[in-house]
Image 1: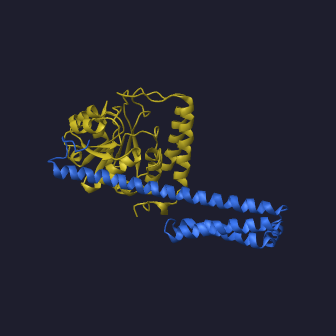
Image 2: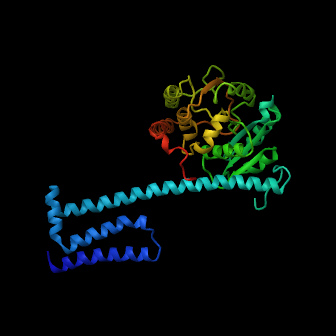
Image 3: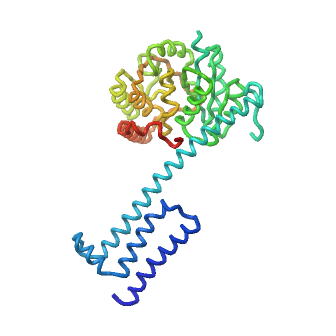
Length: 126
Length: 243
């Protein structure tokens, strides 16, 4: 490993961490969404500063080529984040649906109280 | 019949301007005293105006959410306005409101009445994989609900007070949830289900799909819906996004 690649690894990890922390600081990212990126950034920084930890980790897990551990960890992080997003999307969809259901009933009640029976008249804008 | 005044007929309608008005008129004519709620499921056509013009009460969803969500609006409206029974009728005109008194009769003994087409009446014909899918579903759901069902996918069904109380918080909004998962939920809450025969009419608008690929997709999705409905832990009921 050359000095350049050593520095490149550290700088890349730092960039990720700085970006995530900055987004968190400005409230653009909620902490529950940022946690996996933070974990990934910290792991990358550790592996960047102390390459021996990567070699040690790979040998403990029986991985012959240490870089495969990096790939594995990266893909695992992406999968976890994707799954988390799918779950959150499902929740958001369910909430939107419940809101739409409530809106339909509120709109109906509003039409009924402003009119006499709620039938026979068309609300404005339709 | 006093039961009619305590009954809400719910018609989920998505782009049914060609038939909804006629169905509403038929319901109000054949079932005097009944309340008729059309749930316009985000239609892009004149469904809303036609339904109002025909004399129905109309709740309008801001965008299309499917039959399940439309029925959830129906159940909530029923609870908020003191209706005891909710009867779902398709707004494409394939269900005959004349079966409703018979369904209400049965509701005195059970919680859910499904008016189905293969129960010895009518000439509805489904062929090939779709028929197979319906048979298989009916078989599994029959054992789940401890009653004999020949067509579990019928959208012509009546819910009594106990069923309405369960469904207002638990009616599934997923694809096919309104037909399949709703029966699984019914059995989890020990609701009794019964099927009665009915005659299905030809749709006054639109045609049923008989495409084999679509039928196979339908079978697959139906099986997924069924398996996950059965796997779902009871603790997750009523704990949806609204809580």
